[in-house]
Length: 338
Image (cartoon, rainbow, N blue to C red; front, side, top):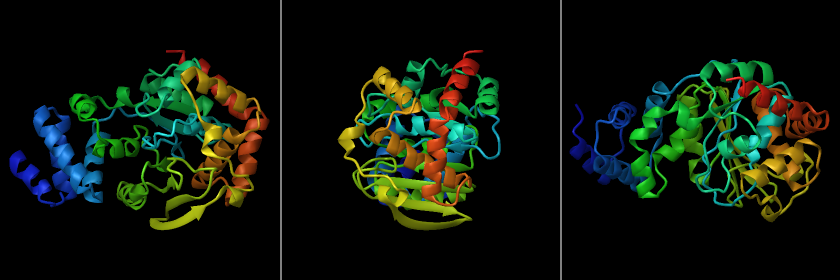
């Protein structure tokens, strides 16, 4: 039995939880055994102290254990990030997912509705006439036959309902903003994960290593973007072969020109859905370039290519051949068979 009062006091005093302590605490939270005041105190105290790797891993293990799982191919990848960069861009990782799927890589796209943006993954997919409320079996069918399936976070993480009211009223980023992207219900072992703050690059790489990921890039643009940026440098922390390395990537490294963030500003779900359709129909602009460089990274993570320039070539072929658009069309059809 956890002594909640002493646990809260310990965190306030600056003490960190061990992985086991974190796992036990978040089991109590997600089982609905704590009051909203207790949950609020814990989340706020952790946020002020700063969540560490053991706390993140312990909480993630609980969320994963309680999720509604989906059967997916072993080589599946996820492009879900933390969100929260507040830059209001197009839906980049969603468009990237179709391009990767067009390359033959299964994408278990984990996501939710908008939080800090005008259009979240679920919102734009809905605008593209894709059923976002598929059963696990239907999602597996999508992954098998369209190389892409959408895992709507609120459908797969029912344990989150016990913290949703508190998170909404607090209105601050908490550990749940971090562990969500680490909790893919299809257990994807490869991941391209954008973060809203560079301070999370190494901790999330270490967390994914401890959670059994095979390869991942944790990325943060120096312009604040939680994607690989085209306006300048992107800071990258790579997990590969159980080792973590840091490097910087610039669009010029991939043979792409730089563009200001203003050229990838998005709008509401319908607006962003139209942009995705135009992109998949071959429109050449800054949006295409940022999708290409992120897709190229995903292809590297998936061991499909050896370098970023080769990845851009393959990603371009996925769009220009119609393969990426075909993945979208298949997902529309199969997801609506429910």
